[in-house]
Image (tube, rainbow, N blue to C red):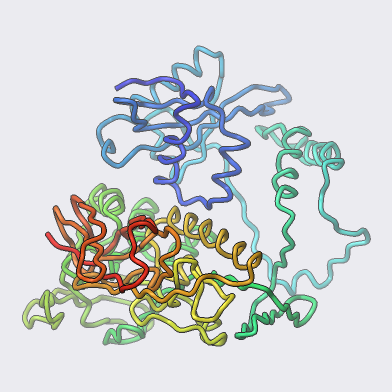
Length: 527
């Protein structure tokens, strides 16, 4: 174990560990590591030239009782999964605090998911975040005599002065100067892309005419290309027909997450979670940290549907039991949920096994039973959907069955990592530019077939004229397996894996030189 300050060569690995641990959008990560990141303020643990843990010390000046102090704001505290629980972060924090002490800093700051996780290092709660929720009708009497406009670089000094004036009656605030405001104005102005907020697209047709409802009324846009990125929605109780009453206390995982994260509202005290999707697993940990008792996580399949890291960090670390091949067979309660009945199911037929019922008293049931791509607009445009992914059928350009209409992200297929979404969007953007510049893309006549135990593939067809990334999921867990890409009965590419599970998307880059100009492809997995 070697603890040291980062070097320029470490940046790519630090970004990788950050992306693994945090669910920040690609734009934020790009902005942060281009404008904020400094290897001189980054401390890492590395072994054999591999960065295993990292944190960063962003420099701020704070005002405490009218005195200015330079402090470090600890961010990006992250570790790779293989070293979690082995004391790496303990050593990293100890080294960091010793460095700050040597530098004469009297205090350091951090914003944690739960400050109690850092009490062992001497941190304690010092700031509250206050959130106000206003209804739009409460703003009807508000009148503004001046005009609103976007800030420019010339406004940075004024913004700094306004901020300082607003803070002068407070204690312990961050000092923000012109440089601070210039940095954020720069980020907003960097991309000269028009955008409309508070708008809802209500129609897209096959002529690439987009109709949107905006604050200024209905707007129509005739586009050269349309990119569908509507994301996905959660499956509800109605989608799985769970029997029983309909009391209060039953939430989709995303709804429960919103209540706790955005409105600071606890949804219950005794919780059962149905489904082992990632959001449900994360909520199991969050509810536990907030003081609730998570009785169990119930999963119909004989394997977990969440990422292994979330099983480890959100369930095992908090001794929350996970019951595979089980489901809820009854919901009890009148005005409020009182209990659920859980039964074991046959691994193959998924039928309930009589006599295996167990009753769990609870006041809250969280449903984490999968996501469905939001494709109502796609259907309006005449886009053909794949019944397996519930997303569009696309070629290697991410172009749908309607020329000039493209799709990517969770509207195309449900992703397990935001990294894959970002990379997919980058590839799509290149192909959209190619389409707009050339007016047409190569016809895709080579179909890709999903073999036994392969759930689906993206893309579903290709032209064979360019390299592409093949994405797919397996139907069941595999160990020490290999994936063969076949064409005309011949193996054109083989890739070996230590494991492959349904929760993790598999991606293989296929080169155009590896493909024949004729003949469909087939993806096969075997142990």
